[in-house]
Image (cartoon, rainbow, N blue to C red):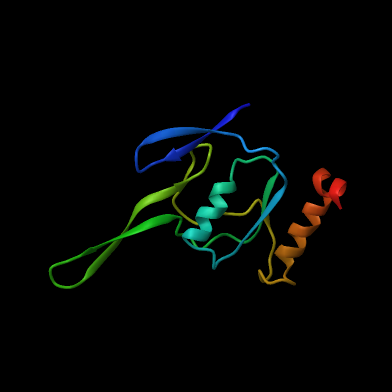
Length: 129
C-alpha cells in the first residue's frame, strides 16, 4: 500500500500515513465566502484520487492567523502557517476550483448541481446508485 505524506509544518517534518481505502469520489464546493478553516478542508482533499472541486475561488486566507499586540494598543495580524496539501504544495492566496461554476453555493445553486452531476457520472456512484 502506497503512503501519502502529511506535511506538519509546525514541526517541519513530513509524517507518512497509509492511504485510506476505499477512496470514493468527493466533490468539494468552494466560493468567495470560503475562508481559513474552509480552505483547509478544501486543501486537505487536494492531491487525493477521485476529487474534484466546483464553484468559485476561495476568499484567500488559507492560513493560521497570528496576532501581536503592540505597545500603543494596536494589533498586527499575520499568517503563522499556510495550508499545505498532500503533495507539499503551499497555498498562500485564493484557491481556484477545478471546475469554475458561477452561481450561488446554495442547495439549488449551480456549483452544487454541477458537483452532483459529476458525482453521479463516476463509476462508484453509478455502481451504488
